[in-house]
Image 1: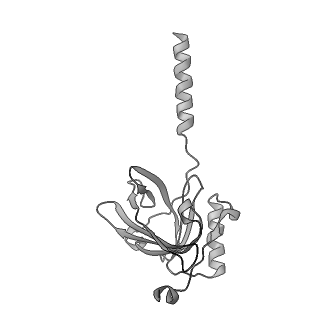
Image 2 (image 1 turned 30 degrees about the vertical axis):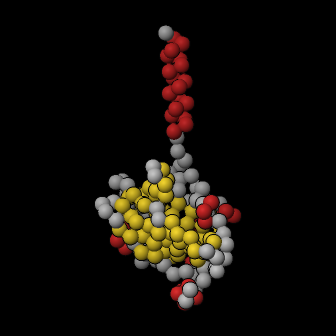
Length: 180
């Protein structure tokens, strides 16, 4: 009987240890979902494997049914003239916070997507994950000042990201993008 009790405690302990998560990342307060919708240019990031060598990355959000967000992520692969890649994941706003979403690229898998910061004018945002493995610094325009960019990078560092891992993304001006 004792062996079963010890075994049960060990199994329960290992299960709890395996299920632990990283320190949760800070969430933005009171995100207005309607104000958040629209185009966001990726200015800097810690890229996923599909975003490596992305040029002109753009994330577009549109309200879907209930707590769903229809997302379009597009970019040019390898250069400004490269093939335009487009992905359409679905965001699921979680009940506990408008800043906490689950993003689904492939059914049935969903990954954490947290709005960690958005300014009052909804012009700049930082999206992160508790694992600190991916990051997106985004703006409503394809270019921001170097000072503004460094301020956003500093915010990301305070969230627990490594400054050295954050890559500035290549973005062309809107005028050049519109002529293509």
